[in-house]
Length: 265
Length: 307
Image 1 (cartoon, rainbow over the protein chains, first blue to last red):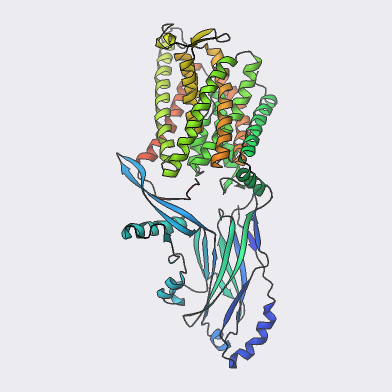
Image 2 (tube, chains in turn cyan, orange):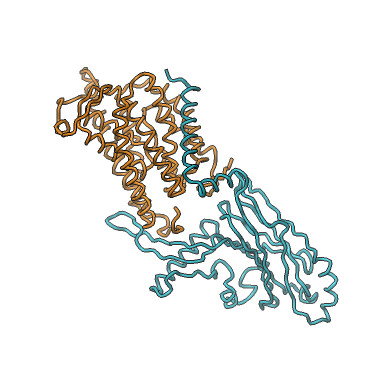
């Protein structure tokens, strides 16, 4: 099934104001800023959900037209899922059988992390600033539950955690996913994986000028299950016993209907 | 067409699941087994988390055994007294199984344990059945009368105390082995998501000498309640029953079963048993290969307290 495109149009009340400020900014040494806006604060996942491309619009404030014309402004947009504790396990061979032996627990790991950039990472800024900002799938800070543990082991499991997340499509990078529509308006496309987690997602935009980090702005987005899925999920988690009874009842009804519809004798 | 499973929290293809249900339903109609032992591994091969595959498998088993038990009840081939005694053991076994299930899950060894149990049980049952059916196929070719042999009327089980009379089964036997068989089936049901018919039927026939015509109905009756209990407890403690997944499997399964029954009428008993044995062995081998071959990725992620 083709990925359903889900556009989040942002209405920029600021747009007019920003446009007005641009001319002034040329002389005015006001620091640049960045704004992003989402037209909706929540996205509903329905039965047909198979991932989506999320479009986020934003604008630069006080952009220097000279710098903008030379394309020396860069924007990185990140959509980060809710944080959870995660256990990474490694299988090793014991008597010929592959068994989970070693494990390492991490705290506050974003379940999903989708990033879009104007240009390839190495062209925007130095590796050091990515690490400082903990920006990009290779630089997300993954905090081990036991930071005092064996360092090589922690490094190994941290790497494995990133790789598994990337392989599952939950951590993704979209180079060229941010496009300037005008000198100070941009549009970012970030990927929402089919099994994107429900909860509060944070959209963040980072502005770079001449390879230097300038400003960051963020907005929140609630992803939740809609309609039937939402009802089922809530029922199962809040009223487990009743949900269990319901599942049993449905199964018996299907079995009974089956024996009526197709008589075997 | 994709559908989002609310509990498994992932998108799957509706037609794959319907086809899976239909295929297993066809086989269960063909061979007269519940099919839980095929559904759960198939779901795991389809990347459904094993914890959800097991709990949902138990839920799906209710549907198929309920329709079977109904027709046996009408024909009077269901021993309620024996069924209730098996059930009493089943509840105990199932409770223990769910406890073990949660411990294994927190240790990260659940998947391994499920696979090992499947390999051992399916390997043993499949192997025994294959030997038995090949022998009777040979005997049939030699012109000898076929059918399951029922050696010596009494064994050690019939000397145990606490005897009880089961009228429908024309049995006077100790309740200890009855409760024991029930408990083992209950344990397997909660850990493997199976009804356990493929173990219960031979156990009742060979160990307790229950008449063959009563065995299937009584085993189905007990399986309904054990798997209903398992489903309930999984739903309350582990939140791993996916009702949408179970529904899709059951709808496919009920339809598939009808064609299976018709196809089964065209095949001879020993041929059927040999085929079933081969299939059971194939599933066991497939699971065993996964255990012994280096996995594509030795690392796996899980959320503590979740599958």
